[in-house]
Image 1 (cartoon, one colour):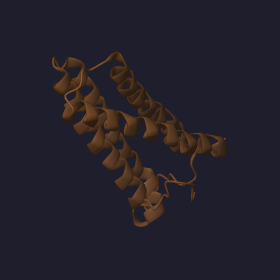
Image 2 (cartoon, one colour; image 1 turned 90 degrees about the vertical axis):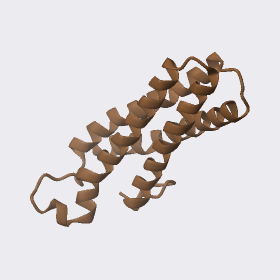
Image 3 (cartoon, one colour; image 1 turned 60 degrees about the vertical axis):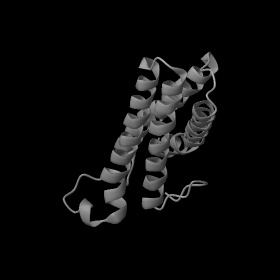
Image 4 (cartoon, one colour; image 1 turned 45 degrees about the vertical axis):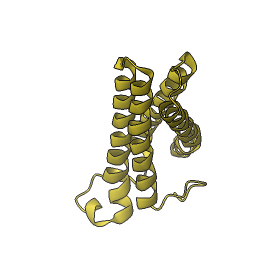
Length: 146
């Protein structure tokens, strides 16, 4: 079961990252180009957020079946154990919260510029947190080392 969930979580990250990057690209183009905010923009932002929430749900299952997550007092001394038990999920949760806040602010914004700006800023910070979290854990973006 662990391998199936791990591969699902590992594979789905590509969908999530591509959707977030597309949302960021469209947001900056719309914001800086003063474009009209259309339903397609709203949908890509929504699907990007949903993809991260889906990753969270898969990650929660993985957290409890992973052999790398351990609840022992010595786990904080082991870099790999500490990363998977504490650091990875905390940083990813921060990224997901940022995306959710950005999406919420975008929905509440009145002008197209404000909608694009909220997505551009919050989604960009979130993807940076994701990349820092992966780099910190030594996880290659392409492939899996665990």
